[in-house]
Length: 244
Image (cartoon, rainbow, N blue to C red; front, top):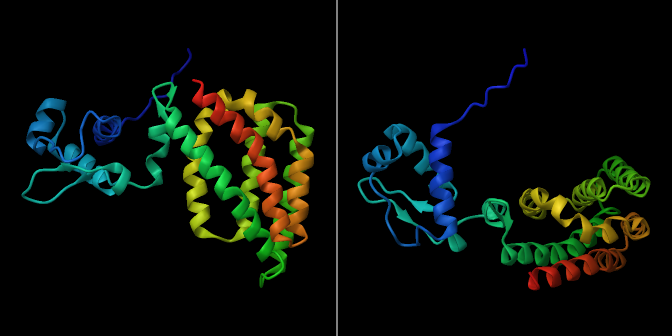
């Protein structure tokens, strides 16, 4: 007999997902108010504690404002939410939102060269040379893996790991957190992006040149190498989105 794993579902999580989707999709407009906990519980067929927990999560995500004794108000997520909502904005069901995808690509092209510049600047000024040496080894190993791989989807995954190592060398928590959220938004679309990204992730020489610039401690060269690496695919993707 073949056993099927039981998927554990969170009732409060389901409530959160439903309300978050309506806020981010515009069905619940900024400034509007939600029904009371009791009304939501009755409408959704769940307990009030489950609704309360979901509302607390929504408030923590910057999607609603919850004040005791007052109605729960929908916030303008563009002003109150953080980067963690990007994955939800990018994919609506199985459809990629072109405007959100474009903004992610623009952020990628802007941040990548700066991260590379910081990595090159700090690689020779760190107090822990052993950590730098390990980071550089991992960087070059990523390039070798990239060159040895022919599958464009796997190459994209290796390229993401390459940038993880660049971030470690850059030692910037702000860029690290931004990258984590951008990666979370980007990863679900890897398969769809593979045809356009193949030229970039298949360009082993460009990755090797970037790694060498960081290793040499040359910030300007590293930034320019990153820009040359990321620019063509970014431009192609944006053009494809504009024509969609």
